[in-house]
Image 1 (cartoon, rainbow, N blue to C red):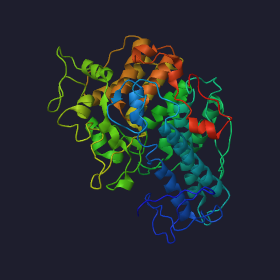
Image 2: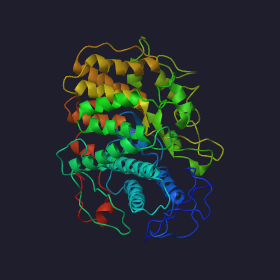
Image 3: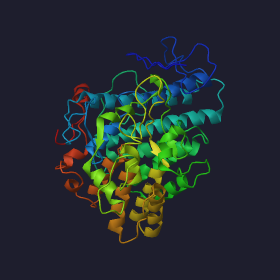
Image 4: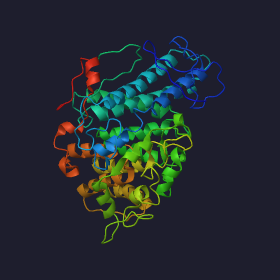
Amino acid sequence: MKQYIKNSTAVLLFAVAASVTSCSIDDIKPYNKLTTENTIRDEASAQLVLNGVYDLGREFDVSFFPLHLAAYGNEGTISGFMSGSKGFNTNEVPADNIFLANLYSGHYKIINATNFLIQELEAGKAIGIADDKKGEMISEAKFQRAFAHFNLLRYFGEFYDLNSANGIVLRTSFSTTLESNPRNTVADVYKQIEADLVDASAKGPQYVEHFYSGSLAAKALLSKVYLYEKKYTEAATLADEVINNDEGYALEAQYSDIFKNSFNSSEVIFAPLTGPDNEGKTNMYEVIKTSYSQTLRTLADAQVGTTTDGKLTTTGSGYDPRFSFAYSAATKKSNGNGKYPFLNNLSSQGNTLYHLRLGEIYLIKAEAEVRKAGGDLDIALESLNEIRLRAGVTAKNLSDKATLLSDIRNEKLLELFFENGEGWFDIVRYVNLGNLTAATAKASLVSPNQFVLPIPLQVLAGNKTIIQNKGY
């Protein structure tokens, strides 16, 4: 079925078909304006609401922001016109950027939708649903709520300072009207995210398709949250559990297969569903308006022991194979980046946005192992080298803790460039942990105020209790 979602100013409207014959994730076709009293009536109608939550993650305003983050960090630049791109290359994003306002509200739409689903299921509105199925649906909704809160905190809050009052506005109950609440502390936001993910890890479904957020996805995201919270022992332990899962997730033998196999890749833990029509796609085709940075090119060049610069002719030579796969003439495809080969047309498959994949979890384990009290540097190095050897570059040798941390950060940049913005967030974390100087990572990073994006002016106009971030 085609996908359509309509908004209402009075109530949250989610789609329920008059006659439900399938619970495919693409089934979200509405037939009337429904109220909170009759939207969720049984398992099938609840599933349609959950499908609507997943679909919100593919909307324009939230589905290609990693490209902006690549430019805000040091992995790439925005080289063509892209919605909301002003200031990202130079870390001078204006507070009146309308795209930021839409990004902000797009995530709160997801949060409000999950709050609605959780509320209705916990109130017993889905007649005849089995308890275990209801628990799984609630866990999926909690994952989505946690993921949206986590993104908002990383974009607009001082996520790197656990003692900061400048978090984001937490929303854990469904609302049909605009509410003006002040920002919660960073610690409070992490506490809620952690609670949702712990519950989702325990009760989430297993052996689900990769475009659903099951128990393993919750554990993977929680390991990252623990890393950000500086709970390094917990992060390392949980990352190891995800790596040694019994659900069949494993590193692809070839890096290129991650992208050739799309969301069905054995190492993709959670990614949106994409399909051959415009309504089944994310907007990562916008990658055509970007290019790699000199920092990324130089780092990729340094991975191969040659005395000459790398080349991007044919299949590429003298570069890290991951960089060559993305940008060499033979594999970069029409969008100029082999990770996202599909154009925005009706006949192409559509580009997948990877929210979580196993390659990142190996590097989370490596960093957490280095940073935790009594951590084993050899274990961390082994986890790092698993990724390097799969990529086809020489394994690293152990020298000292500081060098190993730097190697892990660089490896994440090589592994995940233009995927999910981790290169940028790593810069912020490493600077605040004393492992990096901001201007060394990127010359335009001249103030700590640049570590957080501005609260959009449209948001401030609608909520007078919110205090703007420093420097804007």
